[in-house]
Image (cartoon, rainbow, N blue to C red; front, side):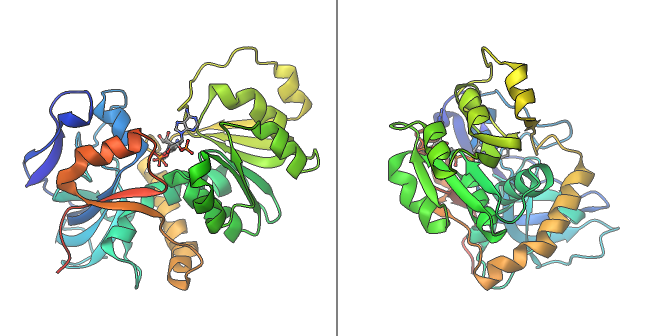
Length: 329
Ligand SMILES: NC(=O)c1ccc[n+]([C@@H]2O[C@H](COP(=O)([O-])OP(=O)(O)OC[C@H]3O[C@@H](n4cnc5c(N)ncnc54)[C@H](OP(=O)(O)O)[C@@H]3O)[C@@H](O)[C@H]2O)c1
């Protein structure tokens, strides 16, 4: 089969499509013919050699896909050849085929295309886990979502609104309309205004209950300032830096701040299966109802994978960049 390979760690130009061995499904696995996959920021880190795949995961990039079942392992009973499926992956999505634990697969809901389904797993499962499992989201909670127009951010805005809570975002100004159309009640331009001042004004000084942060060090002190007593910061990335100077533990104690740092990719397979099953039961039907939508920035042929990575690294995308691997008949 063909797959995108990283010829050597480096820039987008190191991505090439090459022949690689087709994986063989284990007894509990399914071989899926990939129709579409999607980019995640982590792919760009892995391409540069900064984010190795977890033990046992394929070396090939790609944390999600949608496709059709091509072959099933001998213990698999829930899926058959031809089923339309999609899932989170520990790697391997940028390929014509990938082996997936049968318990990780979700059936494509009616009305969703392969390209739309490929845009869902990583960002919606991350946002769902961050808001509900870690953040303890409740109706009427106030939630600050940084990088609000990112893949994860656009999912988090929608899930917050769906929970009858109040999403506020930070994003560069040209992306504010995307965020407000999805339900953000305030969009803060982090380049020209202080998000801590805006949150203080919006919440009459009460602060927010949950912050989803992807920026890290430069936002830490303002995040603590923006938090309500007993609030939670869910730390999902450190795009702006990882080392925070001048932390006063007393400030954290005064607000009883809970700091929850996490990466989904490194979680145990059983955790990801539980998360997938809960998401499939409780959230997936809302895409059919139209209460939730995949937010797709662009769909590109997978032969344009280098251009797709450049678009993401230039921060040009709002929502997901999808790669079409196989045209649907
Ligand atoms: N921990 C986990 O389990 C987990 C899971 C999934 C993703 N993540 C992480 O979540 C982050 C978002 O992923 P994604 O794929 O959704 O990203 P994405 O679609 O590439 O969006 C990232 C956006 O963040 C903003 N940004 C980038 N650098 C920034 C900086 N230094 N300061 C402020 N804003 C900045 C940019 O938007 P603007 O134009 O608005 O600045 C950029 O477009 C990534 O770091 C990813 O690794 C973590």
